[in-house]
Image (cartoon, rainbow, N blue to C red; front, side, top):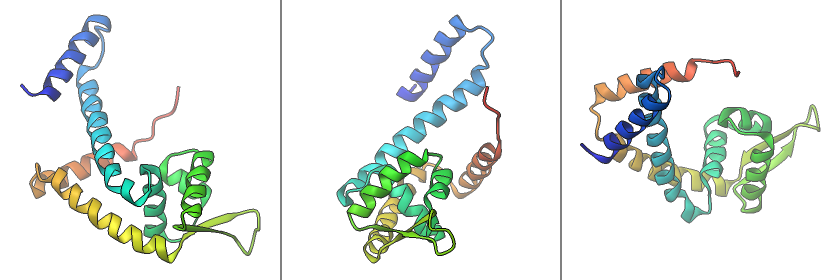
Length: 164
């Protein structure tokens, strides 16, 4: 039994003792999904640190690279972060020359964020490095397993639960 299985078994044993009615199957999926996401995020962020980006910085630049200039509120919505935190990230990215803020012509209260030429160059190299690392992580799955995982996670992401 490896460390991940040991941790999951320990968590399930403790939860079962305290909350006998707990859905341990759901807990196991979430427990491993969160741990996997945390490890993957930490690893990928390490690729972006030499550029001077944090993980949130990379995510902001990635979405702008993918979809083009965006309003800060749309970036916040895509990333699932507050507007205040996105504003802080954009401040740093702008200071470092990767993005530029522009007021929209129609409504000067709205600000769009776009990549500079330096930002475009760096994101291409950064994404290429990240994609190589993603391939290393996903090498444990064959193509069919990857497709199934994409479908399952897509279904999970499309589920909207109301907050208590």
